[in-house]
Image 1 (spheres, helix red, strand yellow):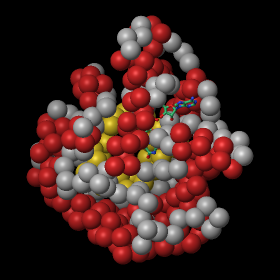
Image 2: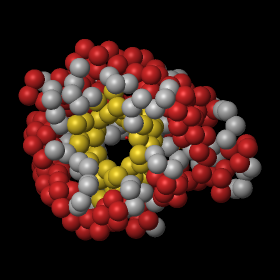
Image 3: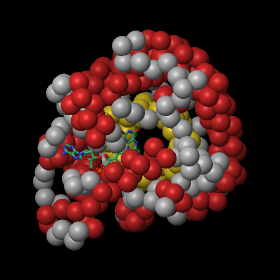
Image 4: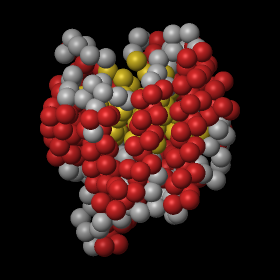
Length: 324
Ligand code: FDA
């Protein structure tokens, strides 16, 4: 099962898959598996793996005719053992020591660095850290970089306000990429909130989450060119809505659609054949490092409220494509 989702044990081993995707017109973002680091030494090892991956991927992309920039996704919880909700600044400071050199390296290799979003307890640290580093004068004109917005959070609209204010003030070139997702930690957020007797920070009705995803899609597409937009979903309705809204707007700037390797392969191929810009998120690493990732994919595939599960159950297309 792991081989369906994980494209190689290391970036070098992943190159044949990445090259095949490139030949089929599909871009990739390599995710070095690893998260929730517990020591500084472990965080240093992850940062060194990221640096080596940037070198390897940038060199490979330079060899492939017509290949765009290399693209690496990283997790801040793997770059510092000090992420704590109550003291986000400590984690931010520590992670900055490892993220800044990676951003410089990505800039020097002409690569894109994308920072994934994890559970809510680290959101503040991740956002503050990335937006602060990308506004530093030495990084203001590169590398190409991005963050993630999670539509399942009930306050995600306010988070987007904050990102757009930043994007318009900093006027970074190239503009920040915002990858819109629903969010992969739904069960964790609900259980954590219940344990503490808090109101869950996520929508609890799936249609509300889907409606919010569509609202945020429209706001993001309208905010171009202050940001570049990537819509990441396997839900045909959510993806079709993004394409339709983009077409209504006259496709003024390219919309990128993103899928997970192993879950959205057919969708990605169909979208690329339609002339859409498509990127597959390709995890790389060994099975132990990938365990948390695989568990999230399992939860996603077996959840009661999931587009892919409904599709597999044979729900009619009209129903699948209906407005949420
Ligand atoms: P679908 O429409 O089936 O939505 C499923 C989602 O709905 C669940 O994952 C959950 O968010 C939400 N949901 C489920 N039950 C619900 C309920 N009862 N009430 C309200 N909402 C409910 N995730 C992340 O957190 N950080 C990241 O950085 C990334 N990065 C990333 C990159 C790429 C390229 C992709 C394709 C995906 C991610 N993800 C992610 C994972 C992403 O969050 C996950 O794949 C999606 O939530 C699945 O949503 P779909 O639109 O595909 O399906």
